[in-house]
Length: 352
Length: 147
Image 1: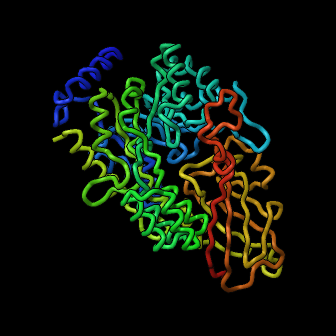
Image 2 (image 1 turned 135 degrees about the horizontal axis):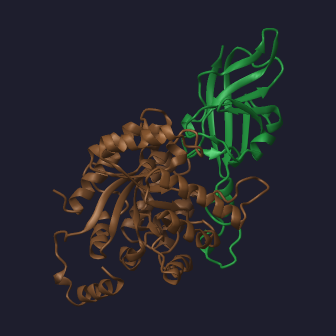
Image 3 (image 1 turned 180 degrees about the horizontal axis):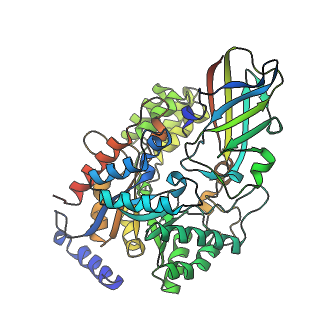
């Protein structure tokens, strides 16, 4: 679908919203997982790389994103034997490498930041390794210097890889930064630089696991948390709730909880639509999947609808990030959390 | 993150010869979701039973090599691998006495998420976040018996 077709389809949908089907239309969205999701089990050596790929395969998440600095022994050297092992595992489990999670460590030493040329060399090294491991995309960090991106595009073209910069909260989808990136794509007409939105952009309410962690850390009295939550649910003005908290001699950390609850920062999901023609990989970020297959804070029903309507082509790669909030007090079961997300995604994508 | 995993119980011991104990060692893991070049280890601090040891009193061993903290700063070709225990060796003549010890660890990994300079004014949303992100310190406390 060209950009013009896309805009026309939006216009049609705006005129006749009833034409938008209730059940998912045909789409080209596939399920994947970033092995980031299994970080805790990999860290503690409860799971190996093979265990991760086997698990991903068993839930139909065949598109694999990997952080080489999480899982490749000896990085940045990668032995040929390990490369063979990597491809043999994908053959065995029917998975495929999709996105290499790159880290542009600009502030490499205490006394020296990478220059432009050193930054491009750093990117070149990652592009070569990604190619060697069969990936199609590189995820770039939000803070990757603009001049390094611009100067690396010819390299990405040479290796036929795509660099996708991650749009991550709290950046606005309408910010100058996002426009700057799109400007590069439009100006160069390149097929080798794009966007990688992270669905944490649409976190519509404070994760309850975060509230509970603040209480465990002694930063928040549960009575204060209840008061704030109730006030917000009843749509009481924040100034009035703040005044009530002052009467309870609330601490700065408790006032911070109030501000967080009242400003969860989730953006309008519709604002993702115009960015989809530039988006080639998506992080299906999540903090907590409940037993009834809902993400507590992120509205995946709305998100998947927008992705289908907007003609997104590519993977939705799970990015489980709740473990860091709960691991102090509870055992982490990353596999179950990712499974719940895929039950949800499968339903929303209309997979049989 | 991973705070409860940062300090390992196993291998906590005095080092040196009997009668000539030179210090002790403890195994630690990275507080981050990936491995990093050794030069990205901005700082490690350790306090045992209230006594704080600075970088000049410690060495860091990984991948079969031992580094002073001055050497770590300059080592950009080797990583502290994700989840891989590194050994922190601390100089303390006589070592620690047999019994329970309280270890407090702090680790700072330098992160390049947000540019330090922003000539095009693109990162205004991150104002005030740069230093905490660059230099966020993760901590862990653990009580371990030394035999």
